[in-house]
Length: 102
Image 1 (spheres, helix red, strand yellow):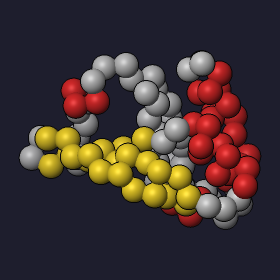
Image 2 (tube, helix red, strand yellow):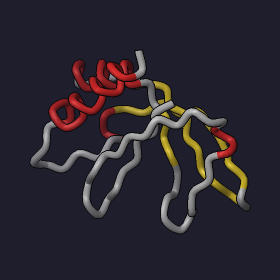
Image 3 (tube, helix red, strand yellow):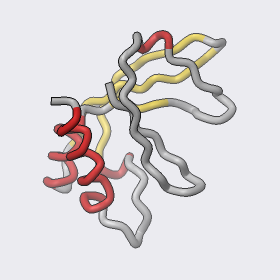
Image 4 (cartoon, helix red, strand yellow):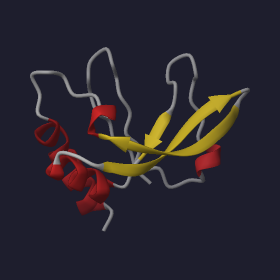
């Protein structure tokens, strides 16, 4: 399982392989509003095409319990600064995820 999240202050993407049960994952809701789980191949194809939507799973916390819901997202839902190209920003990390999770 791979998680991406936006760091709006520094605009970084972090990856971590998480092999435990998703319900055991805990995060501080004062620091992180939620986690969006995407399939790396689908996200890479979305950026290659430059349009469309992919299905995601959003995990957030309320009252110390994880809440999960599915949602379709498009490129505009990913954080890309005006001086960045979305495909160039995410392609290396997505390709690495695909490589290590084969």
